[in-house]
Figure 1 (cartoon, rainbow, N blue to C red):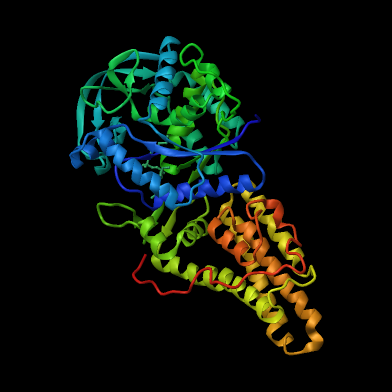
Figure 2: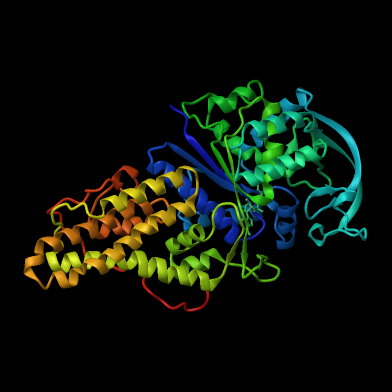
Length: 522
Ligand code: MSP
C-alpha cells in the first residue's frame, strides 16, 4: 500500500475537562485531514491522550481515585469530546494502552543497549508542578521562583539520562537545511536561536518510582518510571509500529518483533501542536528518532494560544470557554467556523462572546445561510424547484475561489482558505442584488434571464458545499441535501462548474444558521 498522509495532534493530559485550546487544535487538524481526503489523499489522522506523569497522578489523588480508574473515566469524556467536535480521526491513542507501553519499552531498551542512555546522579531545584528540574537561570532576581512552578525544592536523585547534547550540531544543521520542518518560520527561528545560544544538556528521562509511580517502568531499571515527555512523544510512533508499519518496525527489530502489514504511515507528515510544546517536538523528538535510526517527521505545524477576553484561559479564575456548551447552544459548525476563521495558525487569538455572535450573524446567518435560503426558495417559487439550463456567469468567480482555497489549504493556511470561500459567498449575494430575480420574475420577457440567474445561484451554493466540507462538514451535507444532490460533497473535484443538471428537482429551503439572540452568552 502506498504511504498514507499521517497527521497527528498533541495528546492531551487527562487531568481535567477539555477546553477551547484543546478543541481548537483538534479542529484545525481535522480540517487539514478532511481537506487532504477531499483532494484524494489517503489520510491517517491520529489523536489521543497523555495519561502518565505527575499532573495526572496528582489530579487522580485529588479526586480520590486510582490513576488508572481516573484516566479511564476521563478517557470516555475525551473520546466523546472528539465526537462532539466531529473529528474524523482514524485511531485514538492512550498512553496507558499496552501497545504504547511495548513500543516505549522497546525504544528504551534499544537506546540503552546502544549507549544512548546512561545513569548519573543529579542535585538540583525541582518543580513538581511542572515536573522538571530548574536551574538558577529560572530563578527570579529576588531568588524566588515564578508561581507557575508551584513549590520548588532541592532534590538529589539518581536518574537516567538520554544523550541529547551530542546531537546538537546535527540538529542545528538539520533545522537550517529543512526550513519547512517547523512552521511558521518564526517558530523555527526561535528554536534555532535557543540551540545556537547555549549547549544542549542531556535529558533526564526517568523519575524514581518511589516519588512518581504513575508511568512506564524503565525496562532495564524498573525502580524508575519513564519521564512523561519521553513517553508521550512516542505515541506518534506507537500507532504505526503496533499496526505493523514496516518503516516504523525496522529500527525496533530484535526489540519488538511484529509481523509487518501493508500499512505505510511512518514518517509522520504533520504534527499539529501548540506553541508551548515546540521544544519537545523540535529538539527532543528529532533527536530521539535519530538515535533510534528512524526517519524524521516531515513537519511541525505550530498554532498560537487562545485567550478569553484578553486574559489567560484558566480554570482557577473561571476564565474559560466551554466548547461543549458553545456547541450545544450554537451548533458544531458555528464553533468550527469561528475558531478557524478568527485565528490564523501561528499568532495568539482572543475569544470574545460578542465576536463569536457577530461572525455567526454576519457571516453564517446573513452571508452563507441567507444565500442558500434565497437561492433555493426562489428556484422553488419561480421554477417549481427545477434546475434550468446551465449558465456560466458566476463560473469564473467560483473557479477563482476554488483555486485560491485549494492553494491555501495545501499550505495549511486555513483562515485564508475561508476568506477565499467567502469572496464567493459575498459575490453571489451581491449578484442577487444586481440581477434582482424578484423583479425579473414579474416580466415574462425576462424568463431566460431569470433562468440564468437562478442557475448561477443554486450552482454556486452547490460548489460552496464542496468547498466548505473540510471546515463545516455538517453544513456542507445540508447544502447538498437541500439541493437533493447525492454523494461527492467530500470530493474536491466536484467543485467543477456545471454539477447541477438541467431538469433536476431540488428540495425545499431550511435555514442553515437560524438567526438567534443568545439565550445566555456562550
Ligand atoms: N500532553 C502534552 C502534549 C504531549 S504531545 C506528545 C500537553 N497536553 S495539554 O493538554 O497541556 O495540551 C495539549 C495541546 O493543547 C497542546 O498542543 C497545547 O498547546 C494546546 N493548548 C492548551 N491550551 C491552549 C490554549 N489556551 N490555546 C490553544 N492551544 C492550547 O501539552
